[in-house]
Length: 260
Image 1: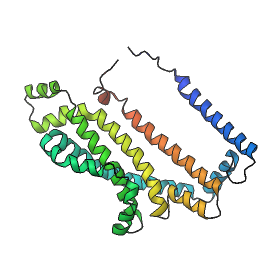
Image 2 (image 1 turned 180 degrees about the horizontal axis):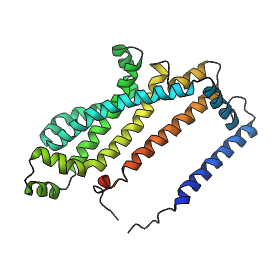
Image 3 (image 1 turned 90 degrees about the vertical axis):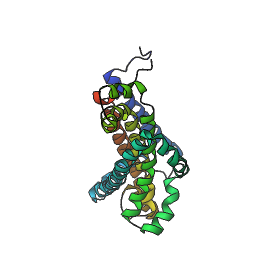
Image 4 (image 1 turned 120 degrees about the horizontal axis):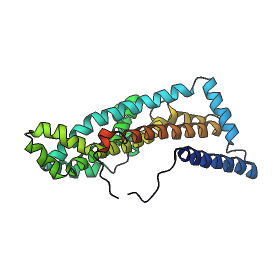
């Protein structure tokens, strides 16, 4: 049994809200005590968000950022999952490509910005390609790891029921590896959301990343900078929570083994 008691339903909301309220209070009084004229207060940021909504800028930037992430992350998942499953299923193929993957994987997607701009120019294609690079490698690695760590008894049971290689992979190995694949997708989505902000600062003229850098350069509007930063964080939380919900689905959770 788990030695830590599950938090009650109200605690799951109360404590995060209390922590957020304390951070806001600390932020407010820090601005008051220091009498800074540069860093905005929570009230200033609230007014900045209202201004962005009134000017119909905020929703457009949010949609542009989400669209780029959807394209880059979707392409990475569509290509990375089949490749990862293949490399995990055929160890010989994995041994061939793994050194190249391990060379490319640690390279930050931000380091590819100059190359992406040279090859694809300034625009959506460059930003989307950077998101793809950031998400692709974690997805491939998670799929390979998920397949290779499927217990051999699952494979033996599938073969005993007469499943061929393709059906065994689709009906036994893939569902058993799905929890690790979802974790890899979740990590990749977090990276994709980080990359889109950085890419939009240099490669495009819209999106939340562009809003941050444009607000800084156009009159040093730090209230808008912090507002954009908070919105980026909140959207990231929503995306991560969505993937965490997937892990609670029964058809996914059967692949998790109780370690307690």
